[in-house]
Amino acid sequence: MIVLTGRLVRALLHLRIVLHLCYLARPSARLRPLTVVLVAMWALSACQDAERMKIADAGTWKDPSDRSGVRTFCELPGSVQYTAAGVVTVPGPEGAPSVSFLQVPTGFCAHYFARLGNARQLRFAPGGELFVASPTTSTTGGGPGGWQAVVILIDDNQNGYADEPITFLSGLPSTQGMLFAPGYFYYQDHTRILRRPYRPGERQPSEPAELMADINYYASALHWPKTLDQADDGTIYVGNGGDQGELCDPAGPMRGGIFKLDGSPGGAAVAKGLRNAI
Image 1 (cartoon, rainbow, N blue to C red):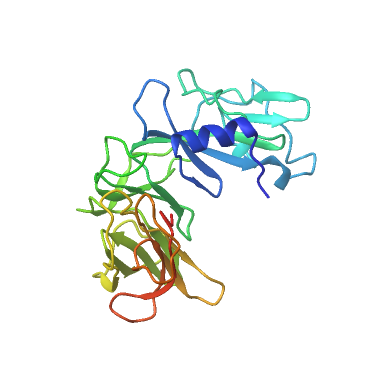
Image 2: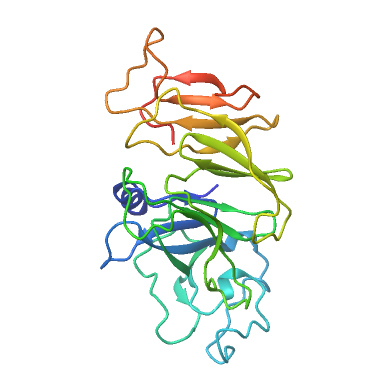
């Protein structure tokens, strides 16, 4: 379980930041919202034995790309470790962006990873690559600098920082929802949910997209993002945004709610009356 400090929770709510697994996004103090810094946050507690918890001293690191002796992400140059003895920063390269604005629980660390405009959702691929949805259509908490694309952030040189972003899918001004399911990559293109066959390690799509559903019962101009998730039984669910003042009225029309992909053209409604099921 990941427990966030009250101050961090309030900051995330205020900035409407996406938090997914071990990564979070937070605007730079001098940039407008959602010109973002992606920060890796890993649990030191996952490696409790003394050997793996060993912190490298200043003489260990010769340059940022030298990972000899590194056993965990938290030992990379520039990582800020929150230990029972206090905050410890692993020596790193000069000029690396600071993550000192973060306060995370003891047993976790924070590490700067990349900067990408208007990052709205993050998903790890089966091979560990970080996929980022970066739209340009205006939405709640949205910001400038979007790529209207699904972008991959990869650390090929293994220095702990993302290399140049790779565009996986382009021409997607209204994209946010993404999901990796066995053998496929699902993604949002405005009201449409599509999928493409996906093999671990792919950096460009290898086959055409297949339309899974066009969820156009109601398309909010502001709450257009559709998040995707998969249940234990394999069913894929899609959130559909409503608007301010949405009522939980069984007799009312279907607007904000949750659908499931069941093979029908528009998906099957599961729940309604939700302002923004995101």
